[in-house]
Length: 275
Image (cartoon, rainbow, N blue to C red; front, top):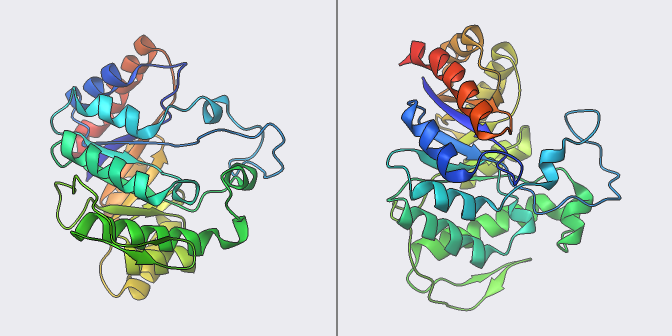
């Protein structure tokens, strides 16, 4: 069982470099960080977690600036987005950012993506929430072309460009792994066509098992599963291990450095039981 960390990196908590060093020093295999470009003040979309939206959502640092800083002080830690909101991002810029991260980290980038939930946020980026699934799929296809072709071009419903040069190409071949967030048939079809792993964001082992079986049916292959943002609970980890989850990500609250280090020490004690 692989164990990593998921968190929000903000201007109010531990800085990226000491965070990355601390996570790697304690033997975690990966760090996945959340992305929100902004949060509209007039927000009608309910927070999926229920209740008030936590303040970390509108203090989040840019994920690729953050992960590049962490890459510079680590050697083994996988560096992922959990998730990058690709429906709010230009695909050419994003392809360049992820490839650049893969180069500066020596091939440790993980491209976690999803369709997002905050309709007002995506509308501010010019995205129609009703078509965000098709938009996400198309931008993923375009990014894979940009990463893998010498003179990529793309002509679709939302993305359109004639042949271009785009370098650097990623260190990883054919490209950094694409971890797809979400659940249900649309997400599973996206994983089947465009993804390398499922970034699941909820569910007990009993709830997750039938979803994993359905994903296998839709994809026609075994799909690695990483469970995002779970409590550091040894019994729960054992349950996910039994059903074949590849990795769990312990959720690290956003706190000052001293408190963060203490929490990571506690998490590391639990994670050590599964190495």
